[in-house]
Figure (cartoon, rainbow, N blue to C red):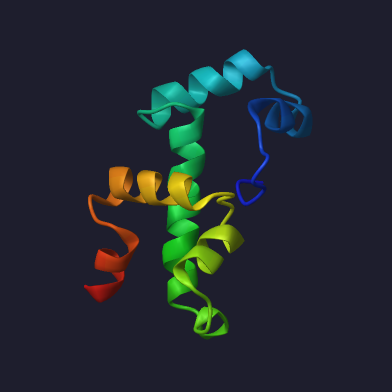
Length: 94
């Protein structure tokens, strides 16, 4: 579900039949961040896994980010830098 760029707590609530406030509390308690941070962390991990796949070899950084669920370049770069302490380009070089 996290790869859907339009995901919301409401979507998750409908799918899991759990109350939105409960989902939010779980995320805030166990992920040490809010809903957006949680989703972005999952997308960043997807991005990093996709970097290793041959099927993404010819994709740009932004192309892989979009395939991982990010809808904008600025959101991706900001989230990546926040969680990895490096830019995506710096990460790829190491």
